[in-house]
Length: 370
Picture 1: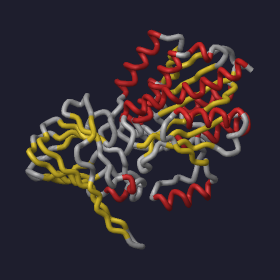
Picture 2: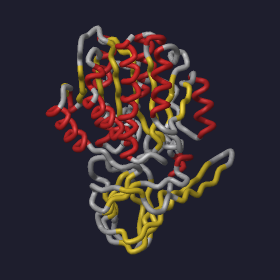
Picture 3: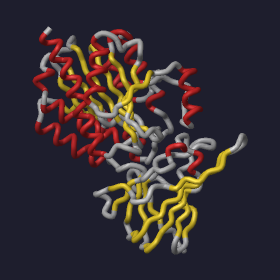
Picture 4: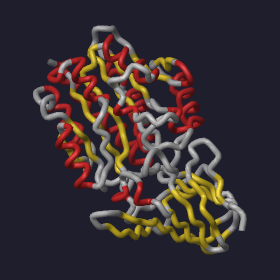
C-alpha cells in the first residue's frame, strides 16, 4: 500500500515506515546521534475503520518515561482538538545495555484528514491572529522585531520595576502559548494594578522551531533555553537587551513538561525570601495543585535527570539564570513554570496564566499601599 501519512505542513513532524489496511508504522523524527524528537504532528490520508498506530523508536526521546498512559490530541478538521479516547500503550524492555520501546495507539473510525499531535497545536497563524487582537484593543504596545518576533509591552518608565514573561523557548511545548494568552489578557484586564510598573512579554520566542515541528530546538538544532550565554541568537539578544535596560524584578519562563503529572514551578531558594517569598506563596496559593521545586545546581540537575529518565543538556545558560546573574540574585524573583502535558488541558493552562497574574498583582497592591 502507498504512504498514507502527511506531515509536510507547519509544525508537522513524523517519519513514515509502512502501513497495511489496519496498521501504520511510524518513527519519531531523528535528530543528532541516537536522539529523536518528542513532538509529533501528522495527518492520516486514508479512511480506516480500525487502526493501530505504532511509533517504533519512542525509547529514543529524552522524555520516554512520559509515554506510558499519555493520551495525545486528535482532530477531524484540524481546528477542534481533543484527547484520544485510548491512551498510548508503551511497551519497552530495558537492561544495562539497551532500552527498546514502541508506542501503540488504537483508534476507531479514522477519516481521511484526521490529525494527531502530541499536544494541541498552537500555530504561527494562531499567534499572529491573537497579536492583532492585543494590538487593537489594549494599552499594551505590540512591538515587531525581525522575522515576525514580537513583544507585548506596557512601559511606565525605564526605572520602574519590570515584570517580564517569556514563552515557547521550546517550540513543541504548545501549552505555554495558551498560558501566555491568559497572562496577557489578565494583564490587560487589571492594568490599573500595574500603573507604576513595566510589563514586557515575549509569548513566542522560538518561531523557527515551531514551524519546523521541533520539540526543544530551533530549525538549526539550538536549544534556546541553554543558549543565553551565546550572542548569535537574535530573539534572545532582543530579550537580553530588555533585561539589561530595565529593572526586571519578576521574571517568568513558561514551559511544558513531558513526564510529570503535576504542574510545578522551579524557584531559586536564594531568591525566595522577603518580598519574593510573598509573591511565590501567593502564586502557589492561587493555583490549585501547583507544586514547588528548587532550581538545582548543575550536578544535582544531572542526577535528577538520570533518575527521572529526562534529558539534561549540561552546557549553556538558561534564561532565568541570566536574569538573576545580570540583575542580582536577591533582587529578582525568577521562576520556571512547567505545565503538565499529561494533566493540564489548554483551557486550564489559560486559566493558570490568569491566576498567576492575579497572584502577582496582590503583591503589587501591597507595595503601593506600603
